[in-house]
Amino acid sequence: MGALLTIPAFVLLAAAYVPGNRIKAAVGHPMVAGVKVWALAHLLANGTLAAIVLFGAFLVWAIADFRSARRRDRAAGTRYPAGTTARDALAVITGLVAWVLFAFLLHRWLIGVQPLA
Image (cartoon, helix red, strand yellow):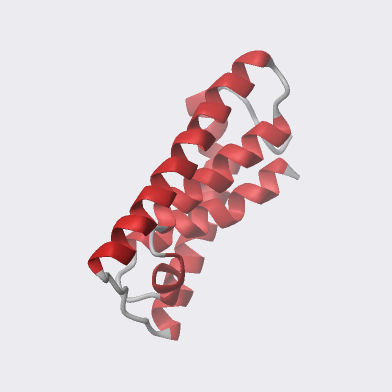
């Protein structure tokens, strides 16, 4: 389940870099939201103390950062413009392609663990 939960994390990460998408308009800070989902997925998949400390710290940081950023946006009156369906599709497809590449090729090479073996 943890590996599948990283799919929305990758889509959120991609949405942070694809301009003019509705995901960013809805979430506001999709990269930080993606880190929250990524950290939670890794906490669910790993039960070692080291993993709990590492991914728990990322989760706590991401929660605090997301809350702070949203509070700052509200105080400044920041609004993220609604995007187009084409940009939403680009963000989703980019996130899915990145997830496939990372899950099936890069994770083992970079991290030393094959998540979907």
